[in-house]
Amino acid sequence: MSVVVVFEPMGRRVRASPGTILEIAREGNVPLRSDCGGRGVCGKCRVVIVDVKGEISEVSEVEKRHLTQEELARGYRLACQVKVLSGCVVVFVPPESRVGVRKVVEGVVERRVELRPAVRKVHLKLPEPSLEDNRPDFERLRDFLGDVEIPLDLLRRLPILLREAKWDVTVVLWGNKLIGIEKGDTSNRVFGLAIDIGSSKIVCHLVDLVSGETVARGYIENPQVVYGEDVVSRITYASRSEENLRRLQRIVVDAINEVIDRLCKEAGVRFDEIYEAVVVGNSVMHHLFFGIYPKFIGVSPFTPAVRKGISYPAKEVGLRMNSEGYVTSLPLIAGFVGADATANLIVTKIHERDEVSMVIDIGTNTEILLGNRDRLLVCSAPSGPAFEGAHISHGMKAVSGAIERVKIVGDEVIYETIDNVKPRGICGSGMIDLVAELYRAGLINRYGKFIGESKRIVKDRIPRFVVAWADETETGKEITVTERDINELLLAKAAIRAGWMILMEKLGIKENEISRIYLAGSFGRHVDVENAKLIGLLPKVPNDRVVFVGDIAVIGAEMALKSVEERRNIEKVVNSIEYIELSADKNFYQTFIKAIPIEGE
Image (cartoon, rainbow, N blue to C red; front, side, top):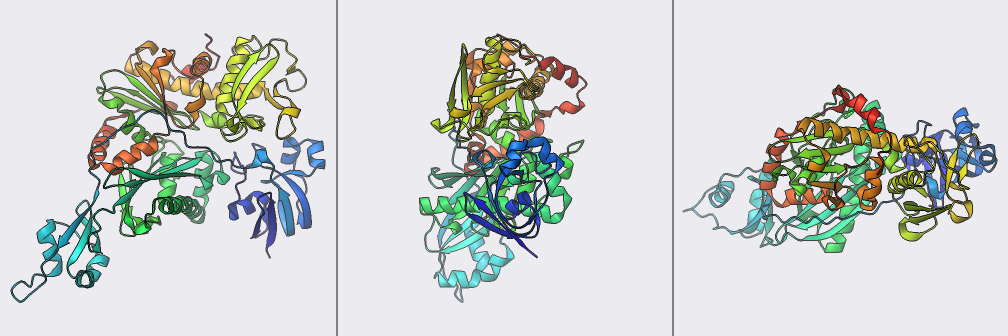
């Protein structure tokens, strides 16, 4: 027996086995928010039951905790709790429960690299065999190309390919492997992909490997978000069964293929003209992309299946490119610190400098690199998803409608939203501003407790500060921040602060000795540096030492795509990096506790 759920306003009709609305949404790739991965913890997967022609489950105790009586009366339910048992159900997904697509944010760093890709083409006009020259076909090629290897599939077709082309061919080489033979001169058509698989967003660049030019760029929301915002939720889901792991691998590859399709149409490139893809991402995204069992990254001692850079034929991975081409990953560093951090290193080059620099990529697991040419340390701070809007009452990602800037003037709150539309919630940068402004205004103490008087502070069972009144918002509800929300942000901040404090202690330096701080990733783009320093998120250095570099992981992947020398160099650097496992550091807990309060000016 199957059931049908119609998701509005998307107009998506999904037929599936009986189950929760969230499970059915996943089956139909409906972008429904599920910060906790469907465990009934976050309360963010709210939907409105519009029509029921069949049977659904009764309201659960979990729903009673997250939804008011008024909301239940209006048809609100939690998608992870309500089960469709039979028939057809129509649900409305409100704006706050939809997964938004965050824009790619480009920074100010530009790196040029000498063009030496792994893929190259050589145009050959071979002499035809004769009684005087009856060398075998492959040996004839090798006499021109040197010591190259050939896969069996290509060897089987080699005699026909050469003769159909009348011995005028272009050979495609990946390193010393012969991966293609094309008729005539196609040596000016060589393309590659640089791909950054983030836990929330996937970014792809299509690169002309003859000119070095990036001919098209695109991005897409990572469809795995419906299985949990954070990587731990996805590890849990993937580890339950082989089918679950295959599903997460399949949907991320399908999403990348969708972007590749768009890029090829935009640039006028055929799929089979793409011969290599260089992929980066954190350790979990890396494992899920390749379909590698990820469970042991998430449990002590946090061991990935492989660290070194790997390459496999595209046909084994499923990417839409030349089937004989290769998909390459840059090396992971350790634990959760993956190939995206390696790519950040390729771009920032902090390992080549005399001065000490820091790279911070803020996320659920914040990656921090600190050092110079003499010594380089890295850690992954367990900051949690608060900066992504999770565990915050009206928190959301940095997508359209998110409050991203806040200023408090008297009793008034001046805010800016992404895309300048009515607010739907508040994102990480907005929360940083708000907490800093509340502290400056004397409305909270160092521990985030309300202490001042304001018409916006509601002191009832759950004390809260009204950021936006109901008539200002898209949802028609007040956007508020509670003491618990502020505490969530301070805990996330403390994990990051404790991370870089421990790295500094091990390196034997003080905050003012850091010559440059690179803020990587989308999050840092709208962070107010003064506010970030006030709450203690960033070291107290002059503002001109803080550089926003944006989504540079894909740039690092692009540089590695263009240059095998970059790959060789970074492999050596990664082998020399000192990884600090914070959970095993005897000073971490004490440092973390000290890092919780707001630092102040």
